[in-house]
Image (cartoon, rainbow, N blue to C red; front, side, top):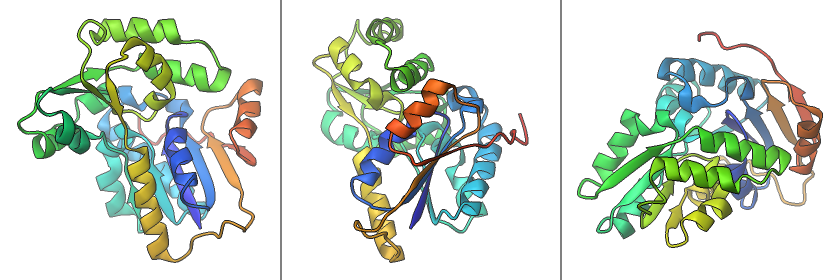
Length: 264
């Protein structure tokens, strides 16, 4: 089976890792770094761009597509499901489990600015946490810092602390922090150092279980003993260090796909 992933950067790799642990398959990861971060783009742009990238994955043989980005999911997954026949698995903030455990104390959703202002997120809060105190904290800087850490192994701890302070989270640490961007799990160590008493929630395992269920229903799961290959596609050119990291991250093939967005 071929499974496609889409994100504007490396954040989706946190979802891919969880899925790979449960579902042996051929993986195609599309990183739209030409337009990183999605959290600063309009809904119309994201919908049009995700349609382009989904078409690319279908051309590459993807039988299931994971939108490994909270922002892209909240803005575009509904329209994608209307345009394509392949199943889509989206990534949404863990509002439901957070509300089940931390409604009384309240919790904070930390995500990109686009996700924080989205009607999709407001709908999740209305549906699953109507009686909870839910705060939001929007940050594109943490996306940038996660990219630096993953690609170049930079020490970003002081910069993460400064951003959390700017967001007011160090001054008033939440009981629970929903990581509403797939980049943020890569910063768990830095976040925990600043917020030692805060519980962090993400949805990687839940997404992996959903992909596993869909792959099993499709009946086309690659057997663990079968040789399978993983492809990495970026819309923006990678430097030499990044090209090396692609191999270190477990990908066999790399492709630069530079087609620009149809609308900006």
